[in-house]
Image 1 (cartoon, rainbow, N blue to C red):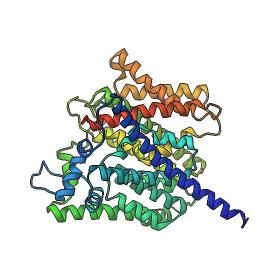
Image 2 (image 1 turned 180 degrees about the vertical axis):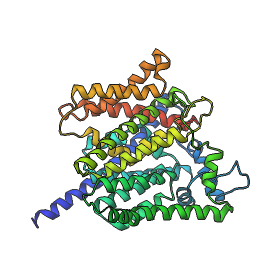
Image 3 (image 1 turned 90 degrees about the horizontal axis):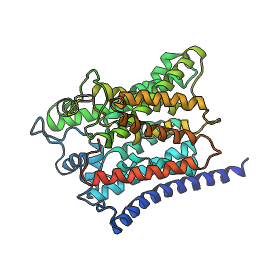
Length: 431
């Protein structure tokens, strides 16, 4: 055994390096492929300091230049968390420079996650090609949040308290969605441990998980007050200017950008809905069959995605369309490591899906599509059921006898990813 251990360690290190290089190579390929498309006249836009400065990037750039400003209660930049723009300010780089740094953040986080789940090269390519990964190429905070969460994941997986604290504390300074982790981590502990001493589990949860998140959030709230003189100014800004206040949903769910964005938001809603169903099943098994969940990170991901759906349905505005908007849900779902864990669980099974599984998923898909307006016209029904075919493609990946489904998924994803990246660079809103 002692002679084999160094070999195993060496193979593990080699696989880690190869994963990181694969992630870097994929990002380089995306840029070079777009350069090729420009050369042949198929597209006209390449990323530069001007084209990368779109939408939320402008808020981050304003912080880089001025810090938090609150001269006007409506038009100000307090609606962002500060860690990402603070790093940007520290590095003294432009939009291109921070976008490169962002992709490095993502590549490191991706490598950590692949190390935890030991996925195949083909699955890595599927993950890298997910359409919303374009966000990792731009000056947004998702890439940093992705890295910090995978650091916390690795800490949870290896029981390293320092990694857990560092990841969760800094994540709480990066994105508001860190708040979702408070109930998610508690449920993870309750479903992932045999220990029936609930009070002890709760104390462990408070120290290892809740305390670093709450400390980060408290520091964020204090810092914004220190600069602006207003307590909880971020949350005030979200309510007054972003419309994120509690409302009963008005159906169907909609997008200000119409079908151009609604398709991917609908897929995100589907993933969240499935997460709630599976989580409910796991809670039932824990309460009545005393079965624990071995993959604690899966439970964490299911709860996070479920809370994301709750936030979208009950806290999003109804601007322009008159019904509840799906703003943000595709980023909250697909640009996070939680989705990758969700996807890994459903595309890696001991047995392939059966006909009854496809029928069940078809029904669930169409329940979700109905909530997004598929009933409004036969064209809508056909349009949304193209999304059902996308879901079926991923289900086929669970059958290891078939080599083509992951190839189809990568090809399809690449088309969508480059299209969405180009839309962002051209100034189109991508929610």
